[in-house]
Amino acid sequence: MSSMTRNDYVASLDSMHKQVYFQGEQVSDPVNHPMLRPSLNACAMTYTLAEAPEHTEIMLAHSALTHRPVNRFTHLHQNPADLVAKVKMLRLLGQTTGCCFQRCVGMDALNALDSVTYEMDQQLRTEYHLRFMEFLSAVQEGDRVVGGAMTDAKGDRHLRPSQQADPDLFVRIVERRAEGIVVRGAKLHQTGAVNAHEILVMPTLALAQGEEEYAVACAIPADAPGVLMIVGRQPSDGRRLEAGRLDMGNPEFGGHEAVIILEDVFVPWQRVFMAGETAFSGMLVERFAAYHRQSYGGCKAGVGDLLIGATQALAQIQGTATAAHVRDKIVEMVNLNETLYACGIACSGEGRPAASGTYLVDPLLANVCKLNVTRAPFEMARLAQDIAGGLLVTLPSEKDLASPVTGPYLRKYLRGTPSASMEARYRMLRLVENLTLGAGAAAYLTESMHGAGSPQAQRIMLARLADLPAKVEIAKRLAGIQDESIQ
Ligand code: SF4
Ligand code: FE
Image 1 (tube, protein in one colour):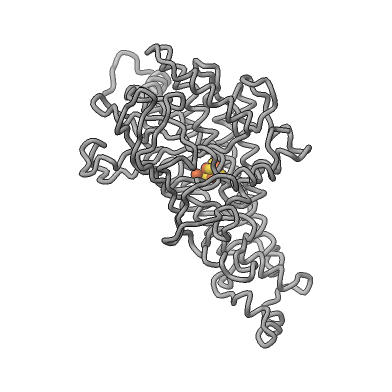
Image 2 (cartoon, rainbow, N blue to C red; image 1 turned 135 degrees about the vertical axis):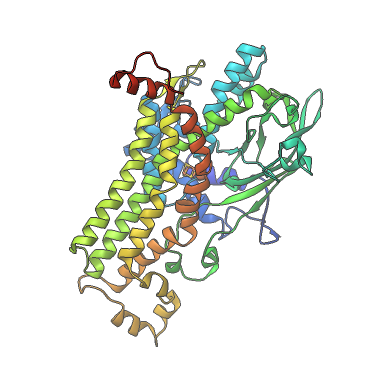
């Protein structure tokens, strides 16, 4: 067992004093707020499963740092088997929660920072890696949730950070003191911010000379003075505030994203892992992105399993499961889903060690993984909606079901095959609605598009990593072209 139980985790969040805002008001009790509780439940599942003996192998890892078992979400990957286990862990959690369980960003940031700080120290004689190891030991010992914070506000995308009308549109160092630095700016789309103990700030893009103040990586307690979180909305999230639970589709779990404001936050040097080394910012961004693009081959495949299951169940309940075209569509969903998983496993199996000894994923295959993730879930959602039928968006509410006047009519007329209850059909329709149109679609669809970088970011990496000249050479050899250079 790792050091925190689920209950310890919830209690630890309860003891923090985060500044959280939602719909214009400060949230006094983020742990129990009905809008946020599903996301806490999802993140807490990373502890619950770690306590389950049948999942120990996948959820725990042996730390090369503390020489003890640690939750895999705090682990540095020591070999390709670790990378594969990570993908399997995320698929399991996706299947269990049906949403974004939020803890992977921090895991990916920790792994990226490990190798980058090591190489910085080697080349620049800095002491970032030593500091980082101390921080990581505390994270592993305390089984802490780390939120990885990369995406800046970015303002006018045409302009470099220092050319923006407002210099704070990219997080930057505004002051250097003997004891540490002061940072200011905002990080957008911050997955699971409210459920994190720590925020691991990283630069958002490769920086050049003259942009030193933006080359900053550091760890900030999530309730440090000057840290403010503004929770974002999701489709149909208001259903969480209604009395019933059926209309939520996935009443227990859900993710959240927040804008994190850093208003002149002081960070002691002990928690600073990059401060001005522009030459290493691109390396950090690329390694983090590769890890997180691998992650999607696990978590989205897990949610995809749920969508396939709910769609198949609906087909059975509605009496269409044996129709050839329905069977074919379900098979296509399986094909698409397993393609994502296959890419996640492939980039893991082809992992290579960085100089620090920590394993990196194969960057080309990780980018192929994520580029598939920007498309397959959308096609799977289309097929699921095709099979589910129009009732997906015309279904009356849970209150109508409970009403003595309308309830009996709904039970009579909305029933499918006699062998299944009307409630089963209702629940499955709501689950498919949640995943493809509602709060769950924020994670399953739009996050699949933009999380870990939008599709164009993956295309740029594919173009860079494809090694087209080598492919031209093998084609020339086979075609018998020897002394001619093809431009
Ligand atoms: Fe983890 Fe997936 Fe959420 Fe990213 S989108 S944090 S990989 S569950
Ligand atoms: Fe994400």
